[in-house]
Image (cartoon, rainbow, N blue to C red; front, side, top):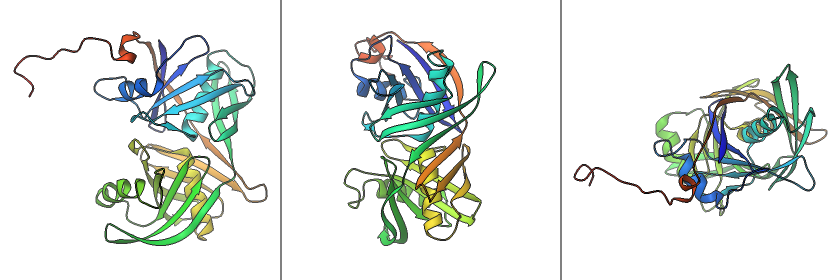
Length: 282
């Protein structure tokens, strides 16, 4: 099985093109391969599959084996990989996802990709600046979706203590029966927002593109941004622009190939023999 490891501002995934190979159990493969000590290591597994209506179909599996509807960084990276592998010469791709068809735009530079962006559609706002007490803290929450759910917390506290306490608590809060991604957003500057993301089924990720879009929308609704901002995260910066006339958000990011490789099928199915040194581990 051949794979490509890619990262977008530190949001790293394992990508497999399934046009010429088969992966019988992607959920199990995602759980095994995403492990950073016993696998390739990554924030999940992304599959590029044939599609009857789009250039290709993207499937995303989190490290816990659950399938996600959408991921902006994965969308841009998958589009770039599809082009870099020689499967298309187009500069605009249509990608089928569980959240619907999405558009990816590529600016080529010789044999490489200089810039990548994606149109991820309208933000579906469930509630805006709802006051809730979570873990004894009063929070202002905005819930919205781009096909995948987000909860944006407008806050000035991006500390580890608040993040690692409230992130998992909000992910599984009763308000979100299917769980949610959680963005902690500090909007001190309307053009440069700061954010940390607790990703559903994964934990902290260094960047999140749909989360950046959710942050820009939430900050704009709160009067703290104007619909177009760079979102600074631990892994880097992603720009999101909300065109309110068209009610659509476009994200601008960067993606890089880290390495390519191959794996025996036994490493995906769990049929390989695992041994430990007797007496060393309990």
